[in-house]
Each structure stands twice: as C-alpha cells, then as structure tokens.
Amino acid sequence: MRPLLATLLLSGLYASAQEKPDLPILDLSTDTSRQVVVAAGTKDTYQGHPTTALMGDGKTLFAVWCINHGGSAGPMAKSQDGGLTWSRLDDKLPKGFATHQNCPSIYRIADPAGKERLWVFSAHLGKRGGPGMPSIVSEDGGESWKELPPLGFPNVMTFSSVMRLQDGRTLGLFHRGPGGADKTPLVILQTITADGGFTWSEPQVVAEVAGKNPCEPFMLRSPDGKEIACLLRENTHKGRSLMMFSRDEGATWSKPVDTSWGLTGDRHYGVRTKDGRWVICFRDQALNSPTKGHFVAWVGTFEDLRQGRPGQYRVKLLHNHPPARTGDCGYPGVELLPDDTIVATTYVKYAPGPEKHSVVSVRFRLSETDKLLSASTASGR
Image 1 (cartoon, rainbow, N blue to C red):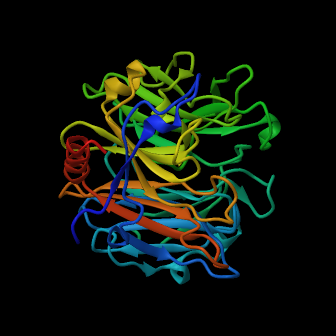
Image 2: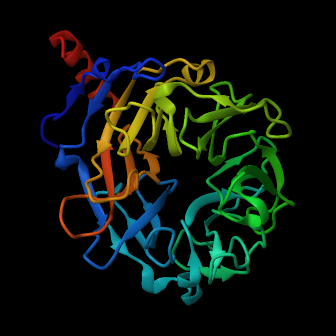
C-alpha cells in the first residue's frame, strides 16, 4: 500500500447555532490504493446494500447484496485473502434466493452447543409485502446452501444486527412500520433463537419514539460484557441518531436518547479493535456535516458512545458521486482482520458517469489514521 493519502477537513468552518462538527474529520476517500471493487455497477446494473461475514480463519470473507435499490437478492462473493480479491458464487446458491428481496444480510450464528452456520436473511419473498424473512443457510462454511421457508415476520428489512447472548442463544433486532410496511411510525423489534437460527421467538417491540422513526439497529457490547448498546438510525433526519442500552441481555432496554453529533447516520455497523476502541461505519446524516451523504467511520470508545461524548475523530471512507440520490450509500459490512486491518464494504456511486452503484470495500488501520491525525494537528491543518 502506498504512503497514506489523506487530509484533515476543517470542521470549524461548518458551524451552526444548533448542530456543528465537534471532532476532527479525516479523509481517505481519494486513496484508491485502499479500495477494492467487489462488484462494479454498469449503465444497467445497480449493485446495492451489501453485508459481509468474516470466517474464523480470519481471512475468508463472504459478501451478499441485492440488485437495484432494495431489489432482488442473488449475488454472493467470496474472498480467501481478507478481501483483496473476490470470486462470485451466484451459481452455487439455491435458485429461489433470487426471489428474496431488500437488503440480504449474512451472519455467522452458533447454536448453544457451539455448532456454527452461515445464514442469509432477507426482508421479503417475491413481491414486497410477501411473507417476511426468507433465508438460505450453509452448514459447511459456505460450500453448499439450502433455502428455508420464511420466518413469517412482517418487516421492512431483515435483521440489521444479531448478537450471541451469554446463555448461548442469539438475539436479533429489526424494524418495521404498521403492518410491516415501510411507513411511519417505525418501531424496533427483537426476537431470539435458541437453536442457532432455525426458529425464532415471536417478535416484541422494544423501542418506539414519539415524533421519530427509529430503525436499522446495531448492537455492540461494553468492554466488561455486562451491557449491550444499540445504535439506531432516526429516519426523519431532523436531528441526531438514537441509542439505547440493556444490562440484562436484552430483557429490557432503556428509553432511546440522542447520540453524539459524530454518530449521526444511517445503518451503523462496526468492530472493536484490539486496543478496545470502536470503529463504526455508516452513511453520514449529521446536520451541517461536510461529509453528509458519504460513507464515513466514527472512532471512539464505548464510554464515548455511552456518555454522548464526541469520540476521537471521523474518517471519510468513500465519496458518493452525483447524480446519486442524496445519501444513497453506506449500508456496510465491517470486519477486523488479525493484523488489525479494518475492511469496510458498502455500495456507492463510485465515480462520475453513467455507471450505477458498485459494491466497494475500503481497507485501513487505526495506527495509520492515528498517525495522520497527529501529523495534521501538528501542522495546524
């Protein structure tokens, strides 16, 4: 990888009376050596809404996405070198997978006995509004797949986040509107599987906020393992994102409150690095942000998040080129490799011109961005 190419954006120039950047913002988006195109968009093909899963060997990655905005599933790719190169697996998947729709999400889920499977859940089967959450599953590390019947949960999107609980069960969170429709008021629901993903409990509403639309939950654990935090997109986009907390493994949740300015965005997903910090990636939706509508990462600690503190800094990862719809990017898979490399994968209007959205990953280490921040601060930029 060539020497670090980045700049520090002068956040103080973008102040407003109510909302303004309150932490440094770095820019890696022009460093193409960090970028890998997983699936290129064309004049006719829009590649959208990817998620990823890293296997236990620390180098095998799977990615799934859909064709068109919230459209049909079908594509899958595999990398055996930590995301540097990819091969397509579409022809190895069940034919019915192409009828699943709207943001397929891939997860490694282990049952209480420790048997691990790869799952891909989707929001709909066939036309939108059909039976909710169909899935495909692999019991052999992604070598073969089978399609399973939908769970039957009315929803807008499938699980935005799953988490293994201390008793070996797995908690899944998703959102929906009235009757499962994509309309206000949106609420957050949770369900639990005790058999590794085959059956799930009846979903229960765990978050609703008057005048706001919480959606796309992302769960993360405190360093001592005793608390779960959940970040929520707020879909009116009139203020900040939301967060809530549980100290009883999801049995109860606190009332959602605003996040810091720097965590305001859509579809959060992140990893905890070896030094204990969190890198959380998302579509930037912060008011008065110089990177609004682009793919960014927030860097900070769990306590920064919990206390509503700004965090350490933000990083602009990819530029979303026009004529993309405002903010049409940022649904990420985020993985941490054994050498501390973060691989953040999203969909984005990758370049000017007629080509539609591509699936693209960005690679970086916090040691690199920390060094950049120190150099930028020392130079007064």
